[in-house]
Length: 188
Length: 185
Image 1: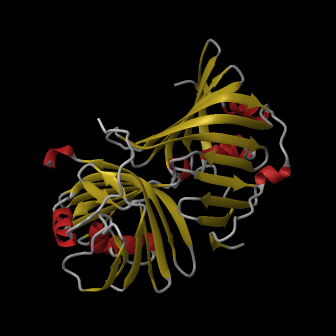
Image 2 (image 1 turned 180 degrees about the horizontal axis):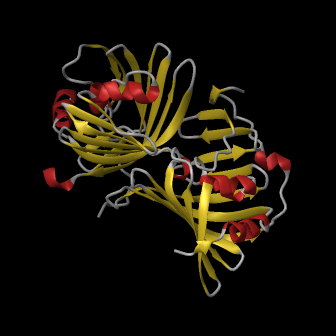
């Protein structure tokens, strides 16, 4: 493995105040067959703001302003509203928006570099983390892939494309107003 | 391959024949979404359901593949595996759903409802059909069900959306993709 690199990951991450990208996500079962495939667009801004929009056929929108998380599913005509859980062990996408000090408490980080490519491997420190391993590969200063292995052997691969570092953003991009007639679940 | 001319509205002329044929259709894989709620809470998950005769495997996962959960087994044995937690065993899948959701899902009946037909061995109170013969509503095992979004999948006409409610509990099943298991054709 690489040498401990918490600091290096922190530098690259703090360099990303905000981030926007198209993503392709594939989830593989332990046996290797594909159980879920989706693509979409993500916008993230530190601290705590994410807008993760998955396109049809598995349309879904996740928005959080760091306090509240809205999960809107147009197929199910349902919005789930929950307090935002910044637990890095639960939603590694929080890597892009979380408080970086917490990063070192949640994961021990190693780095392997090859030319302009840097592969960070994160192993959770806490026993109850959902993931056994998370990797994040950078090309230069831009993250290009993220992979998550959970304790059932399921692997999620996320590829980023058309990545913009530190794009401008507005507060209302990280708010969600449920449309008329949608089932609202959880505390308003 | 499938012709691209618009399909005429699928018509089921003989419901009994359609129903008994679908009762023997028991190998598939489907991908879709599951929404559920009770008076206190609710949520949604991406669903991958693999069925081959009485053996089944349900993969539920949240966004980013988080919260991966598997319920697998057959008619006399079931396991609940959750990421970050130890595996739970039970003779009945329904009992495991209580562990997961806090209430028992009508798993045995859902096995048939998913095909757009009533469960055969349970009393069926009321049902109504669409003009094309497909099942529109059904009351069974004290659940009220609405079926819609029917789609032609190989030789079968299968629902694309099922909404069910029973007292404080309700679920929505949206099936985005059916994959037929070619072996038994």
